[in-house]
Length: 256
Image 1 (spheres, one colour):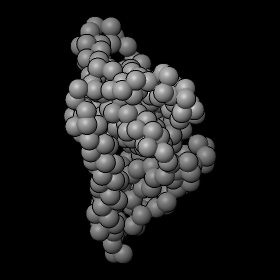
Image 2 (tube, one colour):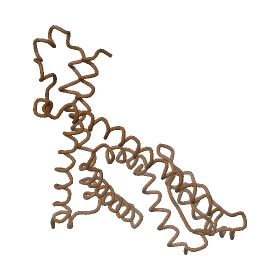
Image 3 (spheres, rainbow, N blue to C red):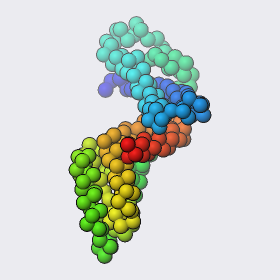
Image 4 (cartoon, rainbow, N blue to C red):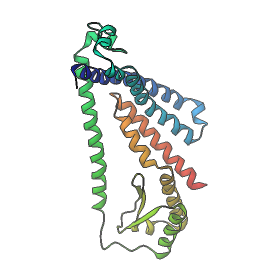
């Protein structure tokens, strides 16, 4: 890539860094105010979840759109047009006109943050892997078998919702939906032994709601948005609020 091309890419990262920071702070403030308002408290969890999803998604998407629309087309400008449109110390548009006095340190900071964000996102993915690894440690061959009637109930509910199911032999009670596009319900024999028929149906319907909503895929995409801004302590709080609302939404589905 030509030096001018690299300059555009670095400026794009820098502008995304600045815009996303400002938009993320504004989105968090708006979500926090709505969370405290009577309007939000009177709404159902589904509406609250949509507010938090918008607060997580809109800042990076809007920032990326601004950068692409204003900066990247310059890659296709000819050298003559570039020279006519851009004078010395004003190489690019958007916020670079105001931050040129802080360059190159601001650009280095933006690029450093981008690399750190990728490392943090990778660490989050590995942490999820190790959580599953700890779960595997709970498995045991000598666990108490599940009642046949409970297994039939699990099969009936999963067949009704079109979700695959896997039974794990463990006295530790747990259930979760695993996977993104082709998710699968995983339940333990310990859970089937611990719950009554009505309690078991409630748990299964809750997990089936996660499957129908593709919540795992949603959370994967939101995790990228969550770590795409230096204000990730704020987006982490938004993410926790969203998780609470998603669980309440699935509870409502299970009740219905």
